[in-house]
Amino acid sequence: MRVVMGPVLSLRRAEADRWLVSALVVAARTPAVHPLEVRCRNSHVEDVVEVRAKELWVHGGEAVYRYDLTVPLDAKRASVVEYRFPGDAKSWSFCVPAAGGKPKMAFVSCNGFSSASEIKKVEDKNRLWRRLAALHAESPYHVLIMGGDQVYADQLWEECSAIKRWVETSLEKRRRRGFTREMATQVRRFYFNLYRDRWRQPEVESMMSSVPTVMMWDDHDIFDGWGSYDPEIQTCDVYQGIFDVAREHFAVFQQQIDPRAGEDHPSRLPGGNGFTLAFELGDYAVLALDARSERSQKRVLSRETWESVWSWTESMPVAGEGGPRHLLLVVGVPVLHADFGALERVMGWLPGDQALEDDVRDHWQSPGHRTERLRLVHRLLDLMRTKKIRATIVSGDVHVACLGAIESERSGARGQRSSVINQLTASGIVHPPPPKLLGYLLERLSEEPEPIDRGIAGTMLAFPARRRKFVLERNFLSLEPDERDDRLWANWWVEGDEDGPATKVIGPVPS
Image 1: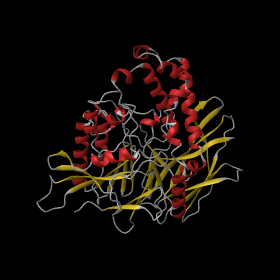
Image 2: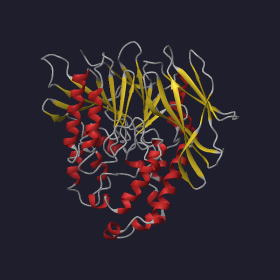
Image 3: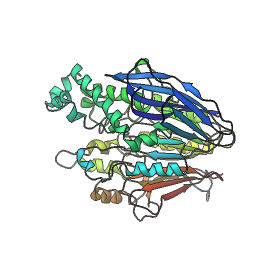
Image 4: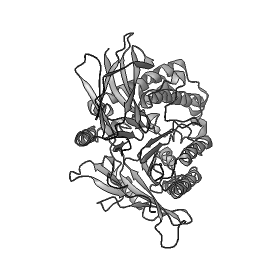
């Protein structure tokens, strides 16, 4: 069997005594698909287990295969899982924590370039992937959270000739035109090749084959600004046809499920039309919101999806009574950022075409999303109070590193510590930062705390060990639990900073 991309590991489900992990490969299609040989090494050396492949997708002479691995957790120590194809000298391995242990996690986003001109701004595109691999070699990560833009699909407008011809017609013709068979063939080829080629880069493939991933898409996994366009173009047949193909390939490559069979990810929350995922990893819960499948200018998630999210959180036991102590809410676009809502209102005044308009409308501060954002903030604060759990938002998208805090003075007695939701933004691991002029604008739009509601304010804080709030260098985030207490060490690794990471320590919810 000739493997052309992979393996890519995915965390399927985390249970108290075992993790379900899958490994995905792209290979030349063959009736004799090789199994995987899997060995789990812990305090009790296990026998080699042979795992058969499941076919997820076929494109031309190549197919996507998934191998489902069941990894028992050792009660005493972390386990190393080794896997290989029979008779092959090459092997891979990954690490899972001990039962009840605290997983060490990394967070990355923006693994690519939005345009050819952006590539020229970077001397070594995968430098930070190698830095992450070096950290992993020193002390293994158990989970790699990928928070959006795992691929950049924006070149489809040039590479798909039928789509390019469509773009060059009048707006009225674009609205009326159907998604043709020629378009569908070209778009399917584009997305398949995009994933296969981007993910088989050695630096990227090295980490994806060594750490189980949790992936959630953002706009560039579809194309720039998806969900924030005017309804008349967002709902046209061609845009919807492209989205359907992007969705299929997201399902196959990022969630490792078979869309042909209507398969769901084992950790997908029911309800709604999205892919929102929820995991309980001992003291940590990870909730990755699908903020693209149902997005419009007036909505981020549907009511059904929100109900499913809050039903899941409400079902968790209280921290200290068997429930997790820390919720990591993963959402592509930051909930708290520079006031892009104000920028959006100003842009309506400006003459000419506004190239950033869809990006501005993506943000939670956009007038169309503010009410939904307010409900989210209140629900998180309520969750912290009722479940005694710390809630932290982890986000990407914006190509800068920054730290924010949403602080509420509405609950508790006078003099009691307030409730704080920290937000950690890390972006991007490959995509270069924005121009310094935009950095200056971000600083100016963040000078004052943002009043979210009475007694609730959001503040962009000075970045750790920096005088400014927004760091315009490439970066990724390491999330490292302290084994001695309930603190989480959030370490940003910033390109060009050789002195070590910038660190934010997040403690437990005060009792």
